[in-house]
Image 1 (cartoon, rainbow, N blue to C red):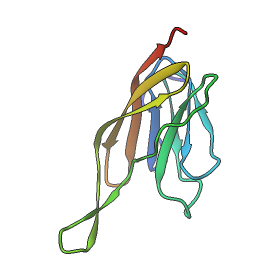
Image 2 (cartoon, rainbow, N blue to C red; image 1 turned 60 degrees about the vertical axis):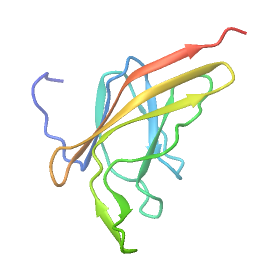
Image 3 (tube, rainbow, N blue to C red; image 1 turned 30 degrees about the vertical axis):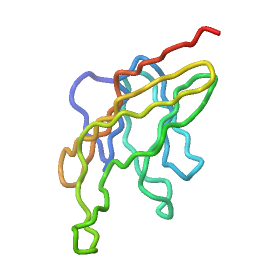
Length: 131
């Protein structure tokens, strides 16, 4: 693999900027894609019947998923009762708390063009509880 620029022929580019392997997939489906540390991949929705939401899972003993989050667009009320679709770039924090651990990850959504969106997660924080 060369270190130069790459063309990605996908509407969504997913990047794992953490030091850990993370699993992700479309919420509401059984999708489970593994993405190693410092890797990226093109992504497309597995189901048109489910909402366009992703969720993450740390590759660890708990295998607990985060709450889903939007990556391409969201529906919001305009105040007159009508819904409008708009792009939703920005950063959100998702966390998972289990009996023996807690971790959080920052999810950054950036629209590269009218057709392409980049989703990056970074700053994975893992706290182990002493029992």
